[in-house]
Length: 116
Image (tube, rainbow, N blue to C red; front, side, top):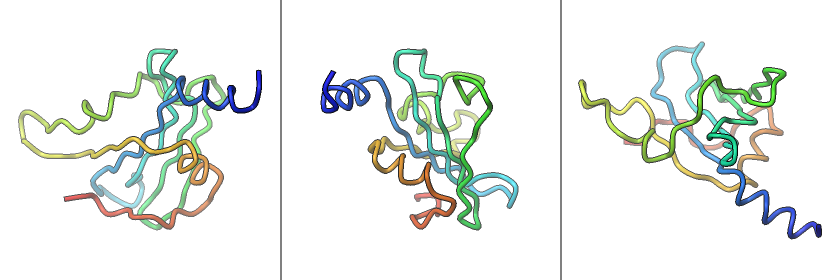
C-alpha cells in the first residue's frame, strides 16, 4: 500500500473531534481532543486534555482505547441538556493534522474559551 493510500484509509477510519467543556475548576480540562475509531464503535484510540492554564496532557490508559464508552457524534455532543437547556459541551470535527499537532505538544496556544 502506498503512503498516500495509507493516509486516505486512515482518514476514512478515524474522525478527529475538538470538544470544549465549560469551565468547572482548575482540575477539569476545558478542551478534549479525540481520535475516534469509526470501525470500532466510536471508541477513542488517542486523546488529549487541555486545562485552563493551557497544559496539554495526552491520555494514555495502556489499552487499545482511551475512553470507557463510545464517543458521541458531534451532533450528539452539541445537543442541549433537555432539563436545563444548557450547553455544557461544544464539539467540532477537526483535521488529523490539527489533532496530531496538539497530541505532540505540551501546551495549547489556540482558543480555550467556551464558544457562545
